[in-house]
Amino acid sequence: MPGHADALLTQLRRAVGECNVLTDPAAMEGFLADWTGRYRGQADAVVRPRTTEEVSRVVGECASVGARICVQGGNTGLVGGSVPPPRDDTGQPVIVLSTARMTDIDEVDAVGRCVGAQAGATVDAIDGRAADAGLAFPIDLASRESATAGGVVSTNAGGIRMIRRGNTRSQVLGIEAVLADGRILRRWTSLVKDNVGYDLPALLAGSEGTLAVITRVLFKLVVPPSAATVAVAAVEHVEDAIALIGAASSRGLTVEAAELMTEAGIELVHEHGQRRPTATPAPFYVLLEVSGVGDIETTMAELLDGTGGLVDAVLEPAPARALWGARESHTETIARSSTTPVVKLDISVPIRALPETFAELAAVGTTSDFPCRPILFGHVGDGNIHVNLLDVPEEHAGTVTDRVFGIVAANGGSISAEHGIGRAKTAWTHLGRSDVDLDTMRAVKAAFDPQGLLNPGVIFGLPAP
Ligand code: 2HG
Ligand code: ZN
Image (cartoon, rainbow, N blue to C red):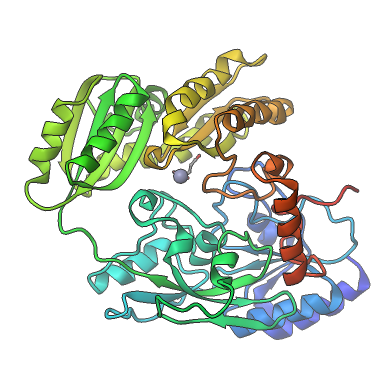
């Protein structure tokens, strides 16, 4: 570590306290590797501020010596965006700025239907606070107990309620963030109409820690549905699942969630202790959570009766945790079942292209020159499929990713639906954005972070050595 890094550490200890600057390799270990085990980086220290002011001091000290900062929330992102780069050719110190101690959640504003939370507050904790006030947090995802406010905003996470409520960006009313020079940017208003200039909170949402360090977020809250029911239909074709979702909307039901799974995924989670959703297996399973007025169970049962390709079905009042459990345990079970780090791709295509794309993606396992087990599942109502490829030999990870993204691009889709680009997909951004678009994004990055200190390598890749 260069000499000026020692001076930096001294300043960081002054800013956040001795015990919140970790330099011991064993203590830092968990902050340097991501949840998937695929991405691992190096850092000189892990710094754990408690307040926005401390973050400001940390970032200011780093800026003064050109130190790089990797921002980390729950570290359960799936694209390597929350761990430092594997190498640093600049010779500058690298720190991980963990928001783990920034967990405060404000009192709910029940009239304005919003709540402020520090970046490290988990989705689950924010939802709990909202529930105490008779409201709900409109963002929900399987990793709710680890995903943080800062993490879901900086990745513009989608999740299981996106079909109903929109993405995370659209739930953000206000934001507080520390800029790359240490100044604090605060847009904090519960006004839903406020058109004074650029929408900077919307820009920071989805910027993956490359533009500023998000420290606090003012989120919208919603009124939860008074009654909801969960159906799982085991069907022959992807088309049948899509038709059922459309039919539910047409009958006046509100679709709260719509998730697709395959027999391969259900069989796997069943082997690991989950209940099979239906007694009879089928190639596909669609989980539909609907709300509405009147007898929604009868309406849903009628819709299931009329569903083409239906093999079996089950209906339970929400929250129907066992039905959701089969869906939500996919990620962890897949991670435990692969002999190599799972190649995790998160794509979306127009709904009309889903059946064809799904078939092409499922065939990647059999058309590859090496054995590989695809398990596909995801937020079918949003056209979003999580392509998980198990047992891919590490040296073939790039080739198989190329193949999947080629299929997605040919079907008019996106190579990153909701997980972001991180470090994982920097080589493929040209498939989703033109040169002009990418140049404009680089210009925005340069305006916010002229020294390139924040999450170097994320979204844009590292400069060639
Ligand atoms: C989900 O929808 C997450 O459960 C994770 O986005 C997806 O593991 C995955 O590929
Ligand atoms: Zn997802």
